[in-house]
Structures are given as structure tokens and as C-alpha cells.
Amino acid sequence: MGSLLREMTGYRDAVYALEQEAKLADKVVEIVGDAQSATYVFANGGSQVQDPDTKELLLLETLLDIVNLGAAKNFEVRLRWGRQLAEATDAHGAPGPTSRPSVKQRRSRP
Image (cartoon, rainbow, N blue to C red; front, side):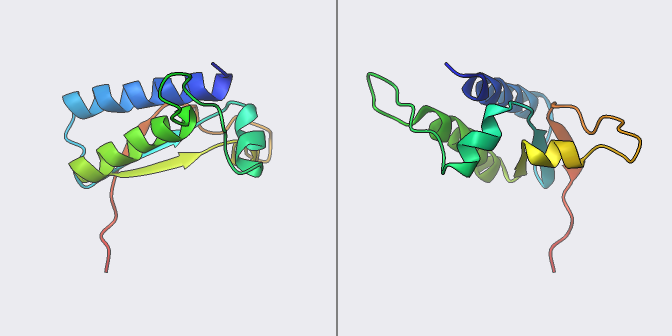
């Protein structure tokens, strides 16, 4: 399993655990990832790594697990990787956000 899939699997498990402990309805769960392979995967249209038994696309299915949980429990999921992390540093080179899920209040939509 590659680093991006390991990272995404951890985020999925963390979001599932968080949803069990916190009321996430009407919130935003933002995941800021740092796997360097993410830049390559997203630039090339995704990962084609399949489960040998089910033939499911592993990264896609893991991502969908997170997004579908958000839809089912009425919270928004935001994902960021790669170049955005480099741009998230300040003018002095201080690190940007950590790669941990965070929860924010969802803004009202007009």
C-alpha cells in the first residue's frame, strides 16, 4: 500500500471515529494531507491501484467512504494536498496547517 493510500485510510478511520464522538452535522471537516505522492496522483488523474479480490480502486473507494459519510451525516468534507501545503507557509517559512482533520462551523448558504 502506498503512502497516499495509508494516509487516506488513516483519515477515513479518524473521521469515522470523530463522527462517533462529536456532532458533525452542519460542520466542515477539513483534511490537509501531506503525502508527496498526492501531487503526482492528482496531476495524473488518480490512482489505478486495485484491490486484487474486488478490483475496486482503493484510493477512490477510501475517498468516497469519507465523502459519503459526510453526505449521510450532513457535514461537509474538504480535502487539500501537495502544492497547497507549500503555499500555506507564511512569508517567514513557518509551517502551514498540520495534517490532522479539523472541524469548523459550516457557513450558511444563501
